[in-house]
Image 1 (cartoon, rainbow, N blue to C red):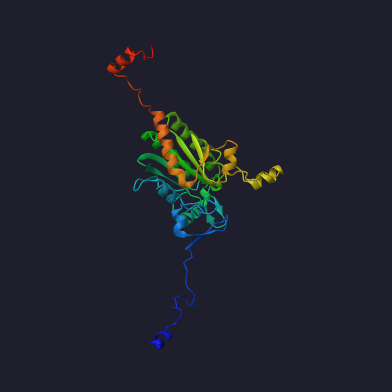
Image 2 (image 1 turned 180 degrees about the vertical axis):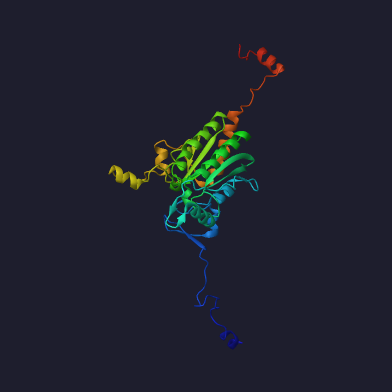
Length: 312
């Protein structure tokens, strides 16, 4: 009997690659770029792509952002058929602007830098416009501005609030003046939303720069930002080179801008749903206040007899 057990190997061999090593999937772990902490991918996704150690908020695709916000099966996308034109015939070497847009769309999995649509949060309808940095740095071009403008118009038609989630490197250089015009176009569209007494909630995520920050992203009833998000017009290195001055620590972070009054609040990703639900209810009640409670005749007679009426 002892001989039988002695013949068993002490360790069971595992299947591996050609070199005999154990094959581990590349996406099994995620390494935080800020604190270098390793997180199990499933736990990382369960935490909404926020580092459990330092709270670093990773960039996330627009579709994933919408999935985090929307009630199940409540999202309807708008204007997915819109595509970028090439009004300037812009080329870099042998690659045209349209070729660049097509190849980027294939890699990013979306046709433009913006995803817009209608969703519900706890049954509350909400128009959303979410940018995706994977598409040409979420730069603002003519399709970007058109989708945002149409979302504003639909929000007015449906009498619902608008949420914009912005990360961007600024205006899209390949469209020249056409991209800069989107700053005025989107801001004007938001003015119509304001005239209809409908709120615009803006969430700034990392990074948010250039014409996006200088236009619609900071023209909102409530301007929020994710922790640690870098927000500004020009980047800190450019500012230091131009001014020849050393910038303070934390310059252009969400916390720095909150302290100096540019934004209203810093909202961790896990608290965003609750925050939006509170804001929607607050503005809905302000727009449609409940009628004052009418005092029943019998109750009024009783209060008058006891000398408790307002007139007494």
